[in-house]
Length: 349
Ligand code: KG4
Ligand code: ZN
Image (cartoon, rainbow, N blue to C red; front, side):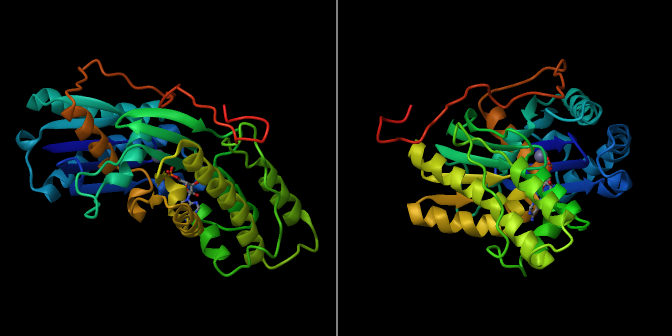
């Protein structure tokens, strides 16, 4: 089964050809970050115009790398929600045109479902891919959520963000520390710092699996405003990163313990963070769980993950017609499981 995946929900134009659901034969990710850099954020109109220029060459290159023609494809999967509406429309329109021209099945994919599938791509250690049930930590510039994946395509929310997403907290922290390059630059600086030299607050949430990073962000702002900041910039970066990472580690481990699930998937841009990977690996080992991280390039937006999710849905016989719509906002699921920590007073709800 050969599936073409197309992703254009934000500022990456990407196409991929995946075989058997999990093997990447061709993959092109064209980043637009340079175009948006002068504005300090993605400019939607510029993004969609660039997608229009790139979409066909990117698809052609992915098909060329894979050495396949459209006639050899079993179907096309495209991100149709959520994202920048003008950007989504470019990918979806290209996908519809190809599906119509070559008489191929088409399926629309939720962007976050794609991120969840990024963990199952290119894993020679796991032929056949998906392992469920699993707990998933999705941490990106726009998301910090914990999901229970009960079965393939069956998701329940366990915890969600109350304010900033983890990636946003990393980006704002990097800016306050005068670093260009967002979370990755903060991660790099923190490597030479002592995470215990400068203490940052940890926020408790109710329900306990929800996330809040506004307190730690405010603490960093106050520190950077002081004339005599404690510790070196590397110590401050390490302490700040430690607070964000431990909040994610604590909740992920608690989610595994409360659900009794033994596999943790970590995905989204923040899954590239070296400290998060190391700490989750340690803590999962302690409780006998297995953490899975996507390879570095598959943490950020890519079409490989969309093709993988699409292959699984196409295999189940799912099809969308040419009326497939795009949505700027769309939850992966609305089903929520509110878990609480068991206390001496009674069992967990
Ligand atoms: O998933 P993603 O590429 O885009 C979306 O937000 O959808 O995630 C980007 C986020 C940014 O906030 C970036 O600062 C963060 O991921 N990020 C990191 C690292 N690499 C990327 N955060 C912490 N440590 C990193 N190494
Ligand atoms: Zn994304």
